[in-house]
Amino acid sequence: MKFWFGLILSLFGGLLGIGLFREWIRLKTILDDSNLDIISLIILVIGLLLSAFDHFEQSQDLKKLENEQKGRVLEPNQKENLILALKKASKTKVVLMSIQGDRESFRFANAIKDLLVESNWEVDGVWEEIIIGGIGPGLVVREKSSDANSIGKIVNEALNKNNINAKVVVKSDLKPDLIQIIVGSRP
Image: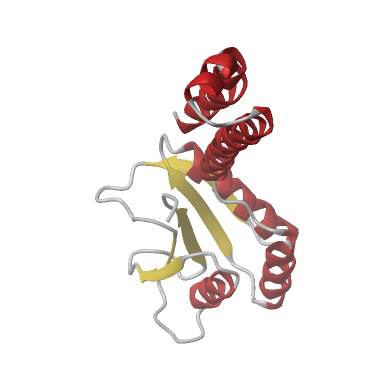
């Protein structure tokens, strides 16, 4: 709204208003042509500045919306760090899941899958699942072991070190040579 107000102020106040009513203003006041030109220029600049600032704010808001819509993306340095960490860890089978109907979750799960495959891990999925009760934002690494140096905890630590929100959940009915990674909603 400020954009259009600034544009109208510039047009009518600065250009047309003083231009059309110049003779009438000079008769009613002691202002001469140079003063009217300066006033016209000031009104014009104020209107254009209002329009420019509003346009800048709108473009910032649009950029923010575009970033939110894009979703989670792995940066090149995150990919490199994760691949190095995953190659060093002992490998196990990973069942990879995303939240059913959440396209952003599914895309990010596929990005995680690509990392795991590149690091020579066996990956089953990406499966879209309905998780009763949900898992919340970020990733959940589920495993059977509660050891301090378990594979799930190593994967979790690598994810968190690279600014990917993850947590470990011990699930006693899983096979010992299997971990599950569930990509939840965007934090």
